[in-house]
Image (tube, rainbow, N blue to C red; front, side, top):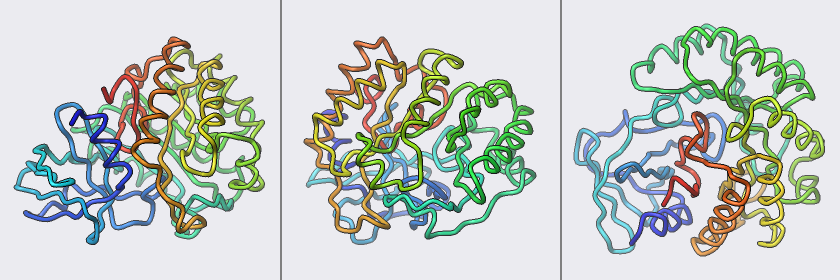
Length: 322
């Protein structure tokens, strides 16, 4: 089985049992994103390819750790040898840090408001990066919204100022104001990700009440002006009820605007219990749409330095998952 097909099927499953030798140093824990609040996840790799799977003792998939990262994946009756990757924070090769682990908004697919995590002091964030500096090549920052969008932006900007000390590529993904791209660019941020989350405005209104779909488009366009080609990204969740035609239209619009889509399979938690994860067949269909749109727009995911497109653990990424 080719890697792309295997990864699509693993993303459909979404989880694994972890057996064998102790593997605590290979377990990633998340304060935001698809795995927020869960029991952790592991990154299984074959060569340069990787996939992130949530830990679930009831999963039909199994990874057996043989020691020192060597691992075997048992999936659909097949044994596949590979390795577990040691995360920096949240993912391998990066310190991907959530600044504020709570949010005043109530997006239906998101667990962060229910978790109600704390805001990390700047000194703590610096210590976190220092602790993994020897095994990372980038820093990525995301955040919930503790009090207001503007107040959160101001705090993240202070964090970014202090992280310049490490002289590493820095990516930032927060809910923006109109001026967020300009302010991040002034501080030396190299990549940004502002998330549409849904394929259509109607779905956005349903899933993300009180947030502004049109503002995100405005900010994405400004970001492409400032940061340039292959440096601006936007999450779109696959499986919220959109049709393939609606999703393809969204992908093509993003790429036509110079934005690389991050197509994230739905993790059906919080306000969407019982909603199925996208099938492997659908993920492969979406991959083909994504691949064509990137090619037409002249965009290249392999240029990404930070955040999700550089990691690839949670998504099928054209140019990297071949």
